[in-house]
Length: 212
Image (cartoon, rainbow, N blue to C red; front, side, top):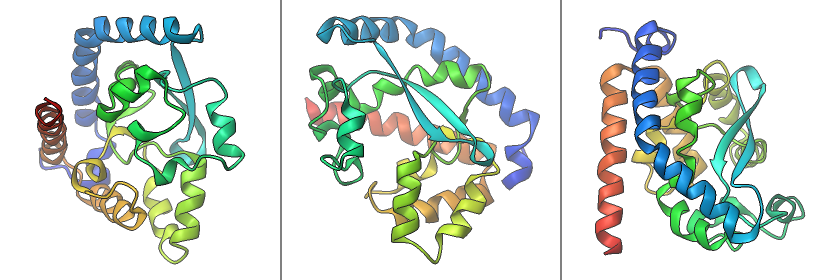
């Protein structure tokens, strides 16, 4: 496809490609999601799914659906300042349940979001859906460049997968994140999206091999 950048972002090609890909993947992984839902529910009796509020297109609130991987009242621990998730790896978060410790390393808890892509509530590949507290931290850390990043982030629908996630070796480095997010916004294309999906797949395989 010759379309790139914002022209590609708003094209029917991207929407059809993503919904078809996400829809097929959602159906294939449905048994896994079902099993994880039951496991999360049985562990402590709480609900198997968790809805997390993120900043969506044009600053509107967006809820992303995940398999619940944290203990009850985990969000309060963050708000009260006893936990800062921006400084720790997901699999090392002390709020994790036993299930969460096992699956957050591979982002398996985010599989339900494929259904959100298939129904048009998220995009498969874009700048990753960001929490409000993460945006506040970015603004504090990068007061001179935050505005430029925010201009790139807000007009588009946030995604499940991102260029930053596959290229940034330090996921907590917000300077690198803003760089890769802005680069993706300007250069996004079908070829770049396929590259990101391929990197995710290879990264997952490497992680599994290391664990063994």
